[in-house]
Every structure is written in structure tokens, then in C-alpha cells.
Length: 351
Image (tube, rainbow, N blue to C red; front, side):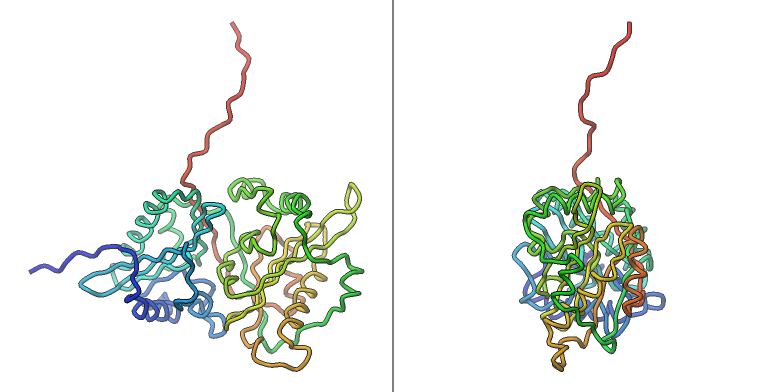
């Protein structure tokens, strides 16, 4: 009697224990020697394991999240976890795990194909994923129709590194202040200055996306943005001299972790601007919010993590000067569910 063929289905509450174990095994395994496959994000390091970043407690799920499993012979051999952004109709694949010496690649492809079909039915416009270039990850997504559009360095500051203190007066003299909704147009211009045109076209941010920077945690997008659901997010901008007087020269996003995840920094800075002050101020905000300056312990045990895209250099050097080290490089991929068409235009006709 032949075994029942495997199938992809939506997860149930009764699956959570098995999924937690599958997630833990996936992110503690060496993919070069194991039959377990995951996105490999960011790298296997005890302080910054993906299982700690994107764990599966029931309370972490939102109504818009999607969780799919691959079931075979009554056991779970794969999972795909998706976070949905209803405001932009975007889906982000956070986890894609599978077990099986020969079947792991096929299981993950079936999971991806299923979630793409389900996303299309639910009106998803774009699908995003970030992964390490190991275990056939990039090839798998390209086979499913994704395209690569960038890479990010993952930088990490260990908890042993002391955090700086930047006084509010010093930050004000440097032009650093909290972001406001009125900064939306200036932030959009800053993003256009920093980001290559093909990437900006694919990410397709609109002006309303910049109007609530403290609430739109995924703007600007990064491979580690999913951990911000476990954080209190604040946004700051830095003003400076520009061609037309004062303009924004930098954006700082700080995520102070509420759980046992690393704190998060994301910096967007004009290419000709030294962003060291923004990085220092971000670390100072983490120290202030966690009480590190007052001798408190326990909320800085996981360190600080920061994603920097490769085209944003020399921003990575600013982080390294502040005690960060590069621990991984991940690839960013995207698939559009809509077909782009050229805008109609009049052309001259010759007889």
C-alpha cells in the first residue's frame, strides 16, 4: 500500500508545537551538512539566531498573517510563514523551512507556489523575501518567478560593547529631531537620492507611505523588518544644508526590543553625508530606552542589529566605527503579481 502523497494546507492551532520544533531545528542546523533547509537569515550565531528573531509564539501572530504547512504521512515536513501588509497589498515570506534529504527542495518549492497562488487570490501585489545564498535559496525563488534586486549586509553589535550617550542638546545641534508627518515629501526625496532608480521603481513607495514613519515600520524596507513587531519603533530625521536651503540628509529608525531579540537600527543617509552622528544617536536612544546608562541589565543582552544595503556604502563603515561587525550578507528578491505596461503616448506618424 503506497503512502499518501504530501499536501500543502493552512496551519491549524494544533500544529503550533510541531511547527515550533521544526523552526528551531531549521535555524540551529548547519545547512551544508543537514537535510534541513531554511532561508538562512541572518546566520547561525547563538545571539542572533533566526529562531529567536522570528519565533512562533501564538501571541506574535496578527490576523493578516498566513502560515502554510506541508503534511506527509501525518507529519509536518515544511512550513512557510508570511506577513501581510494590507495597506500596500504586499506579502513578505519570513520563514520557509523543510526537512528531508532529497525532498526538502521540492517541499519548499511547493510551499512557495501554493502561497503565490493564494496571495494572487487575496489580491497581493508584491511578494518579498530575503535569504542567504545557501542551500539553493536564490535558485528556488528564481524558479518561482522572483527576481533579485539587491543585497544587504547584516551588521551586529555585541551586548558587551558599551552604548554611547548623546545629550539632547548635542543631537539638536547636529540637526537631529523626531520625524513628523510633514516630512513625508522630504523623506521621499531623500529616498530617491539614496536608492538606485530600478530599486525605487520596484519598491514603489508612495507619498502616504512616508507620512507616518513611526507607524510604517517597513518603510524603508529591510530584510530584518519583521522583528519590529517585537519592538517599540521611533523615527528621527537629520536636517542639513542642501541645494535649496535646509533639507533632510538622513533618516534613523530605532526599534527597541520588547522581547529577547536584538534592538534594531536602520539608517538612510545622503551619499555625501557622514552618518556617524545618526548611528551614535540611535545607539544612545537604545541605551536611554533600556536604562543602560542607569546601570540596568537584561534588555541589552541580545545586542543591536542593523541592515545596510550594498549600494548604501560607505554607511557600513559608519556602523563598523561604532562597534558593529558584518555577520551575513543576504539577497533581496521580489515577485510582482501585476504586469507592468507602458503608459500610452502619442507618437509622430510619417507618410
